[in-house]
Image (cartoon, rainbow, N blue to C red):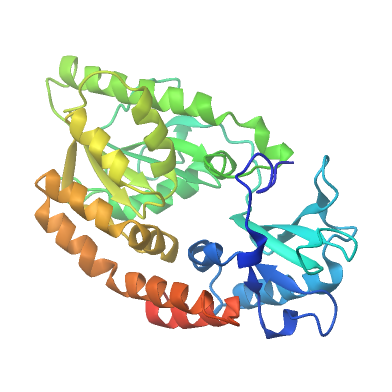
Length: 359
């Protein structure tokens, strides 16, 4: 099992803050958390929902049960642990009385990630005819005029996520759709830490396959479809896979037209690459409806805005600014509060959550 401390830059534990007032060590060990995790925590935990409240309580309980029998322990470092809490993987270091003299004893949370389990569905291209379940295909291109690229628990769930954004037919009927399905566990493998079970998926191989699919779809559109374009929706964490796939593609992509639905990474490098390969963007190229996407876009808003303007997409840049205004304010206030002297991480989360209005 990899952890946030395995092969990562050295962490300054002195910047850590108490997770909440009950984790100051009066009952059980102290529980502290890296304040830099605020945006990620906000994106993964909704403290206004029952499962978010439960996650908070269980994190607070690490003062008593952290490192216990149900915790995952790093094979090479007994101080490093991971607990699965609700839909999270919480990584932490336990400092004992006789340990690092520069630190107070306690539980130091170093990272959190979304937890997802590997499943049996294969990554790759699927075709969906309205009224039927997605069918896996050996095609190396998108057969239909519209396609979606994204991660989900199943290919059917990906279709359900993409369907509201797909153009209807001439008479209002649902359109046929191609999918490039990415299992959730695989998507988490990009820049995150995965469990041994999740290693059954090869993220790099999936990136190569998507790059080939994009290239072959471009050729198919020129030779078979007589130059007509294909419209691709990039859904959620599909933006992670696309970012890597674009690094591997060769040639122009001017027959591909893209739209990002709830992107979860810094889009600026992706948009710059799309510009270089002459790919097109649809009108209103970025749509953000989820808190995770809102926070991701807020954290990189100015870079993405500048890139959109460089591409002549001034209206998209304006829409991005308007749609992320609450999230930008929430992050700014939350970060200021969590770095304040004697701050509690949970107080900053609560304040940012109110300002963000994510629901």
